[in-house]
Length: 172
Image (tube, rainbow, N blue to C red; front, top):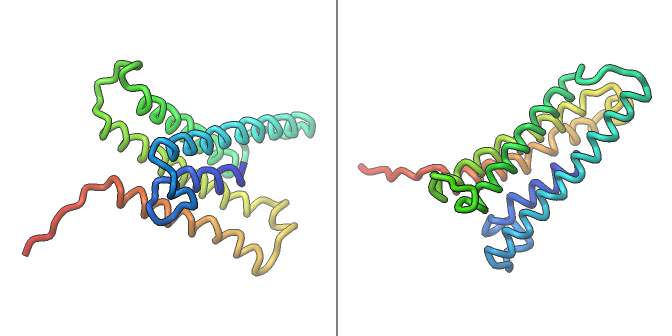
């Protein structure tokens, strides 16, 4: 799940950046299809991961949803579901008979995507505090793993805020 969120979601968002994607040669329609493919991979990996986690907890007879990581994970899943719903509404506004304009739907989709991405980043970082991870990775490597998800998050935040926040001209 971490790889899906960190790689697929990052690339799915950065596809639309003019300088940040190896797929910059694609048409807008091709980028949208690739975006959908990346997001579908996230949903498949997430469903698989949740299934394995529930099965593992049931086999070991441990309680569910008792750590910060698991609670953040549930919030991330909910935000991802909301983001997917916004994306579907954006793709099929006439079929769903929505009254919102396409630019507003794009803003909602981008905002939900940013919230889901930031929640995923915090969730991945919270996994670094698990007993297993701290016993497995120590020292400088632990700090590197902890800080690594922040760099793509800053790039994604910059891209989304630059693309969707209104620009005000400064007049003197």
